Structure formats: C-alpha cells, structure tokens
Length: 139
Image (cartoon, rainbow, N blue to C red):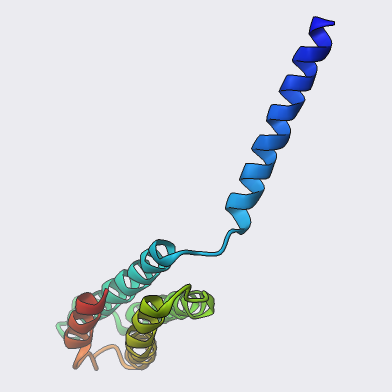
C-alpha cells in the first residue's frame, strides 16, 4: 500500500511542477519584464553606437582598415536591427510601458539607420555619441 501512495505523491508533484513551468513559459510580460527588455535593447544600441564611433575614429586615424570596419559595422547594424525588431514585437502590458516604447522606438530606429550609414562609410561618425547619450537617458 505504501509504494502506491508514494508513487501517487511523486506523480502529483511532477504534474504540479510541469504545470508551473508551463505557466511561467507562456505568461504575458508584466511591466518589469518589458522594462528589462527595453533596457537591454537600449544598452545594446548604446554600445553599438559607441563602438561604431570608436571604429570610425580608428579608420580615420589609419589604425584600422576600412574593409574590416565595414564588415564589423554591418554585422553590428544587423544584430541591432534584430534586437530592435524583437523589442518592437513585444506587447506593452500597460500605459507606462506604452509610453516607454513610444519614447524608445524612434531612438532605436534612428540608431539602426545611423549604424547602417556608418557601415557604408566608416568615417562618417558625426552625431553617434550624441545619439548614444540620448539612448542612455531613456534606457
């Protein structure tokens, strides 16, 4: 009799655990989850812009070949575009999250466009630090 009770208890615990894991994997994001995603995306854009500025300076000073910089910046722009697309698809759970999204998405879109421009001409880094600063303020 005892083995049956033990087996039923273990089975019941496994069912509850699987249900809990299933809920955690499909629950909608709350404001905290949304804010964390926004901060990660803004930080990625900030870092990509500063890296592009440093890379452009290295090309201008003759410390890095232009072909290397173009490949590096193109990959960076593609990666950031993917991150921004993922963030844009995340549904905001409430009004403060919508306001955050509405402030951040135009800056992120501008960052992707500027990175693509800099990938085409690595020496054209005007305004990257200023845009990175604006992203840092929002993020």
